Image (tube, rainbow, N blue to C red; front, side):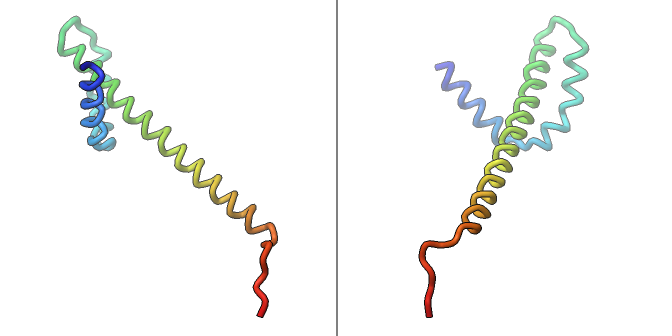
Length: 90
């Protein structure tokens, strides 16, 4: 039950735009630093870490995509350097 609820929350968060979330980062960072033992502060802490989680996830995702593209282009270069086994003869 809890895992299903967390997956639903994750789906909803993934639908949010990182740029919009980043615009809220400062607001929730300031609220987090202004500690008081209230439910509103606790919510602000969760929101702040959700925003950070999305930013970290996107950073890792983008780096992996770039790494894979670089590896693919290196493989193409390496394969184009080796002579083909079959040659076209006219």
